[in-house]
Image (cartoon, rainbow, N blue to C red; front, side):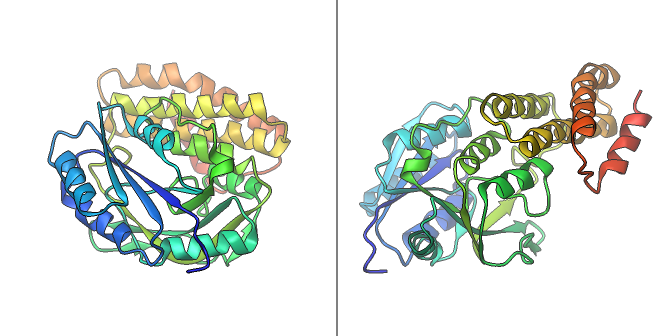
Length: 316
């Protein structure tokens, strides 16, 4: 890779992950591609994460430790975007880790295929030691940005909506900011970027390790805060409607609202918190409206549709 000299900025939001941070940062320091700028955005951590960021920065000139008041993942990533100077930009979650050849591989593929978005498989590592690869049947290939967007909106097994495990050419992400929401913020930006490009290179080599934690923001059980996922899905759909005229994408955005509503309201139904019937009643209307639009306009019927409809029939 000596003939490539582009600077890659790696943005790492950090919040209370002291037990995972060493493996994450070490995996970045040990990349075979060395021209990296690693921005550790300490998002107001209350454990030793902030001090560890300072330690890593003092030991490696490629690392910057940036401290800010807690504002959530979107705020941290936006701070990194404001400060980074790379020709390419990447994101890593601070409890994850990456294989040594991640950025050597992605940069080579980006240059060879002239793609603004280049990504690879992210293996999901569960706490019980099991690892899962949902992309093992997808070959190395150029796929369209529209295909990426449809996979995310329909949540197929090939859904590839996270910002990690990808390399973005600076031009495509310039001026894009993560929305001020606490759920689906990565989907919002990933969809915007996918719909800005005709082709994306997908590498089927698993080079990124996503750590699935039960107590993480996305995996925790039902809480009132999770209702914001429905709000975020509706925001994403409204944003797509305002910017996109592709009928398939518009139909899929309606299904996405319905599916996200189902997933959260199913948690409400199972956990039965105080006022659970009222919560479902108040949230059900927009979801059904989105589903009716979808059924009216689209011929596509995802495989889980019967299961979802059964739930709606049961919950009065």
